[in-house]
Image 1 (spheres, rainbow, N blue to C red):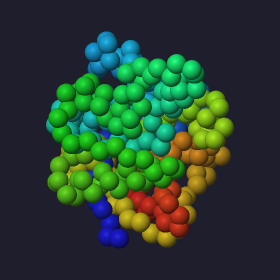
Image 2 (image 1 turned 90 degrees about the horizontal axis):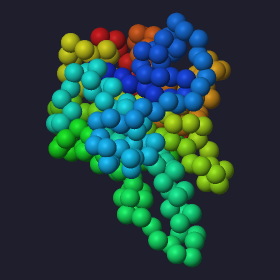
Image 3 (image 1 turned 180 degrees about the horizontal axis):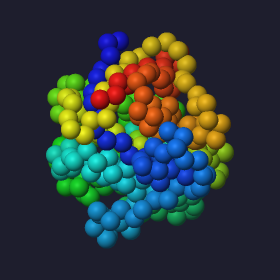
Length: 265
């Protein structure tokens, strides 16, 4: 396939031991040691109090990284096209629904039901930001980040306007975690634009090729890449953090991989 291109105007990260892009950038550039720790999810203060109480971890994660990237890019969120990518979406809510359906009463609350849809994070994002632009929600198992990136790049090319990619994964509780183990909540957001701007950090081109995904040479960080589908973006973020020009192979559906080429601005 022909390469899809866009300019990266901002990056956001929130994951185990990576509390925001500045901290993650220092670790990935090897300017600071990686200190493992649980993902710290901030309260989604942009939401009204009633909705805030109903949100699960994936919504908090998606809103946190999405707003960080949009703010860094200087974007007006109300008119921003978004792409949400998640493998598991709200695993805690899925667990609670399964527990309820296993009881004799089987009475499912409306809140549980509307939080069960895959685009729940996109819905809460629109409430938090007043966004009226188009939004896409997708999943692709371990290839979810690469699929989300391809979709976002496609929309940049088609619409010729900025697009915000938000990839967010949270783990299932037991017993579902035994079948789909994810290490911790991990979220990444990229603000993409069709042309170079004052805040652009790199030009990104991506295409599907036959190949296998790159691993991280840092043995402390490689488990993060494998721990959640959003973490599969770490080799790409490593290029951004080190301000390097180069290419990486990101996990897709075998035998294909997503070849992402980065040119520094």
